[in-house]
Length: 192
Image 1 (cartoon, helix red, strand yellow):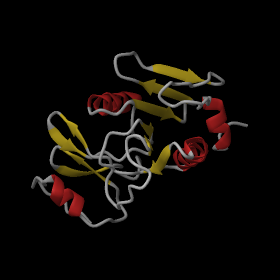
Image 2 (cartoon, one colour):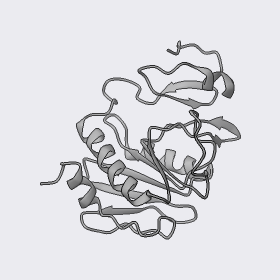
Image 3 (tube, helix red, strand yellow):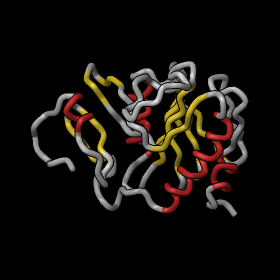
């Protein structure tokens, strides 16, 4: 349980906070709720899409790396400690050894983070966060829009690419993964 105050926390103080019902991110020295109010809290589309992506990516990632739902990631933004909690994270065993087993935040920038737009969030908000992830060393960011049924892929030194319907997402960083928004949303039960 985090008390709202203007007192800034150190990274160590933030990491020592007890877990509770509310997910917090560490931003500019403050514990900030990932979902600021009931309007922003994940709903059916968000939860179903998270589940579908977890299943699809976990099957693909077997023996390659790990896929984790809402895993805090230790990063740096604007020369300050930053701990976002992406909806999904993929990190290869090349970046974080298969035998690493600690109950703590991800200690290195992962290859992929996925953020699903929640009610009350805008694509612009999430695009700004995607840019922050890339600057912090994350290799790819997917922004999933369940209403528009799109996935926008952000990568360093290139413009974002938005995938729709049956367009297949492929990426050398994620070898052998070939997936379309339609397949993801169908798995989530959102496409007939």
